[in-house]
Image (tube, rainbow, N blue to C red; front, side, top):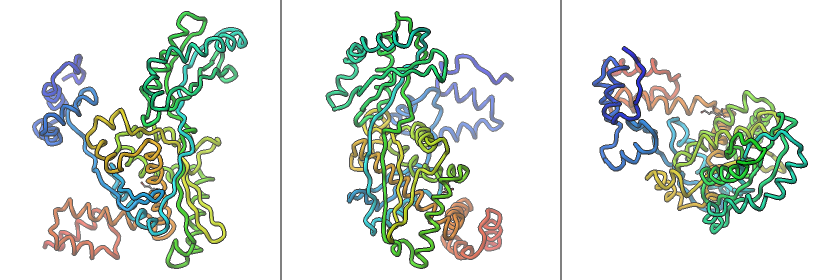
Length: 423
Ligand code: MEV
């Protein structure tokens, strides 16, 4: 039986499901049931999700958790987090509480500039091109006026349009490098619309437009979050030694790309969870963050640590293009709820919150790695998950949790202990 189909998108949802389950599943009924179980019984909610993308056949749920007790610039927050990784929310909550009694997190937005580019080819004299651009620059602003009107009212808009000569990297290649302030919106649609209108102005010229698109590399849309305390407040015992080990862990991530990637992955555990919960684009944030981590030519840590005059300081600097209006933030009821939970932040405030989530996550990981090791905490969560899967009773769960306090946790070891207990 053929596994290809034409006109799939034109089928009704039921027809799509029927074709899929009959073509790819031995137990069609069970596959159909699973898809149905994860569909929302509220017709309006399901229709909303159906319309986010093409060919929706069900919903893919991830847990929506919260991490309380964050203090950022003196303001208290509960962070909404969407993630499937078991230790992320617990780690964020622990670290939030820890720093809430040590002055909290301090954060500052360094800059908010976004970037878009019109990439084009020109086979001719650069001075002539520059002259043509200088003469038409005002016109390029003018043609976008109807699109930028509302954004300008909110204090944003196009900041500058610059002609860049890239011919030393690729023959005949130039670009219009356009900078934007998109205020509280992430601005992807706004930027792309402006670029296409600008590019259209060159329709009848010697310029050959290749493409017009925003850049997800936004090194000038930058935020910094920081924590600091006296070394003796950091650990109960051997504080100086542990503080040094913590700093060495950051230094290692700064010189060793293999470690840096894992180190930054841990940061993104926190960042992505809040980015997702607030309906923002985590792929844009991810790609921009990793490009920033590699800006020196070597992939490095996004966090830094300093120990000076008995004070431990730990900070993150990360580019974050986020929005609190428009896009999914307005459409997805849970994204809206997340923003309400965060007390309706501006995009700048959200940048500070998200950077803090990343810093907190990295703090938790490094503290665990340089003391007890990461598996200690992970395995505790893993153990509870296995106990749940086994559908253990409350007393059986208590027994198993006690039993494994001083033993290595593995799926088979827990199953064996469980079977032994039930014997
Ligand atoms: C796991 O998701 C993240 C960590 O590996 C991060 C790190 O090693 O720093 C624990």
